[in-house]
Image 1 (tube, one colour):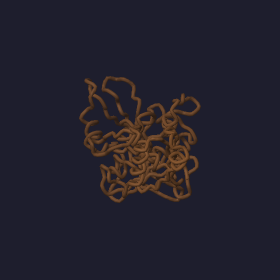
Image 2 (cartoon, rainbow, N blue to C red; image 1 turned 180 degrees about the vertical axis):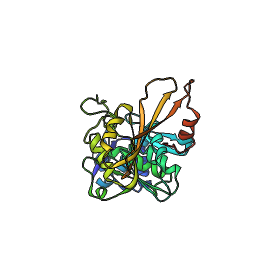
Image 3 (cartoon, helix red, strand yellow; image 1 turned 135 degrees about the vertical axis):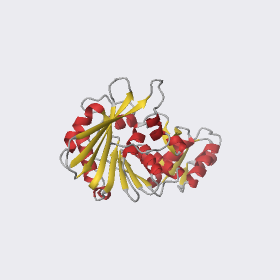
Image 4 (cartoon, one colour; image 1 turned 90 degrees about the vertical axis):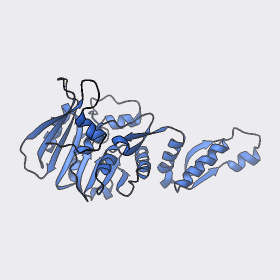
Length: 313
């Protein structure tokens, strides 16, 4: 068993046991006899709440929310609720734009690599009611929050989350193929990126166990012929992605996310490619995200608030 927390507050201990029980997690409180009988006057004695090894991260997510270290954040105009740490990794609009560009249809299976707290996976599943999405990430704490949010969004039957390292995937993942694969991978090269002090932020922003080529090759291997591979990344690294995918992929489209229509540099872009298709260069288009006043353009608003698909051509 593993310790999930310790406290000398009987109200909190009772509360957290009830919360865990509601999630189907069996908890055992240790040291209770010693502190209440052998040392009845020692009010500072701490009691440990223990859970089984297999239940640890699920229990951790319950505790994080109970301790108010997690926020509920709505996306897609309230269609989806995310559970995110107050400190550390937090999703922005990138995963929503990414999910909007995936051309999935009924019965398709989609893989979201580096899913984090599940924003892209949830956004896609909310837009298309008859697909299934699998999200993988190397961080068990983020997967635990995503799995908890899946239940809250009534999507647990169609959205599944698993802990997996792309550099060393489990055998169960190595044998699966998907109709579409999408990713919002770490943007910075490990050789040049300055890693944030926060571990979750560092893993989300700077390549660690898998560099960009390893990441893309994993995605390609998980994809059926004729399926799409979609990646959102820093604009300056899109040519690197194209070069890696040019063998085995074609019909590539680049969508620049133009911050404002005033000539300023593009920071983010989505590249999409079709496995096994003939190569005909890279078609280019763009989406202007903000208007002159700083608000979202009508086109961006349709994606971010109204769950509309984002055409790549």
